Image 1 (tube, rainbow, N blue to C red):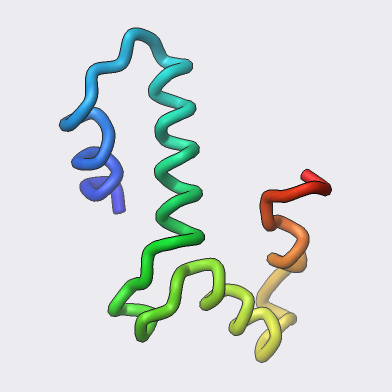
Image 2 (cartoon, rainbow, N blue to C red):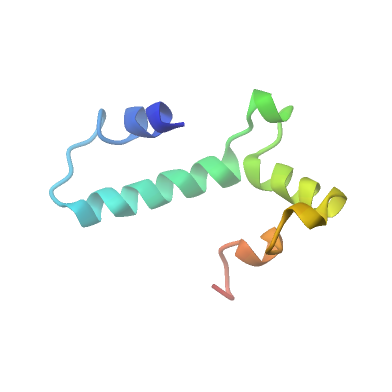
Length: 74
């Protein structure tokens, strides 16, 4: 994952300051977690995989992942 982030950010773009890098990292991680399907998760996006795990094994989580979804209440 570290290599993926590095390849998508600092190896492709020049940032004028740390805040610009932080904003781009945040946007990249959101796009990755909510939009990219992964072979290791059998074609699911990471967020959907976590929600499925939470419904089948809620004892593994201290917080409901549905409450962490960005949106109107965040």
